[in-house]
Image (cartoon, rainbow, N blue to C red):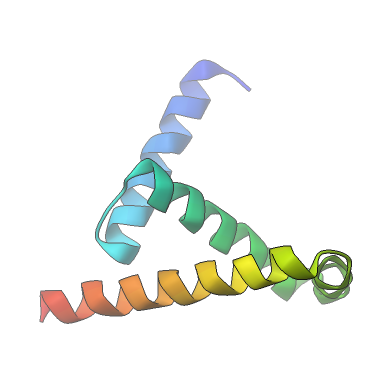
Length: 82
């Protein structure tokens, strides 16, 4: 990929993270990226997600923690706006 595209995509991810959970630190962006990609895969190819979950139960547990954290951060961010 071109550097310009990569920088522009990072800007999109920064803004998405900021709007979703109220921050865009590197750690948060990585979690948001994993959450978004996993959610998309689980919806578009559920058999693949199920297969991956079976192959990597520890990673599945980690993904559950990430999903829970993103949901909590999103809820906190929405409540802080009100």
